[in-house]
Amino acid sequence: MKRLRILTCALGAFALAGGAVGCGDDDEDSAATTTAAASAETINVTGTEYSFELSATPSSETKSITFENQGEEPHDLIFARINEGYTLDEAFEAQGKEGTAENLGSTFAKPGEDGRPIEIKQPLEPGTYAMVCTLETKDGDLHYDLGMQDEFDIE
View: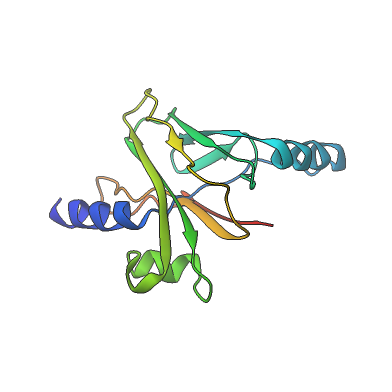
C-alpha cells in the first residue's frame, strides 16, 4: 500500500494518463473520429477495467477533459505532455522526474462516479501527450501495465 501511495503521488505530480481510443475499422468511422478530434473542446473519457475510451483525440483546441469511472475499481486519469526525447514508458518509469513529462492535470474517481474535470489553461502545443491510470490492483499490478494508457500526438 505504501508503494502505491508513493507511486501515485509521484506520478500525480508528473501527470500521465492512459487509455485506448475505440475506433472502428470502417473508413467512415475514421473520418468522423478525425473530424471530432479536430474540433473537440471537451474530451469525455470513460474508464473501465483496464482501458480508457475517449470521445475524441485531444487537439490544440481542447479546453477540458471529463472523466467517468464505469469500472468496478477506483481509477485515476493523469494527463501529461511527454517531453521531447522520451517515450511514455521512460517517463512513467522515471515517475516524471528528470524532465521526462509535464503535468497538465489529474483526476480520480471511485467506481460509478465522475472525477473533477481537468481544465486546460492554454492551448495544447504540438507534441506527444499521454493519459494513464497509476493505481494498482489488489494483486499489485499497475493499471498502466494492464492497458490503462494511451499516447497520442497533437499537431
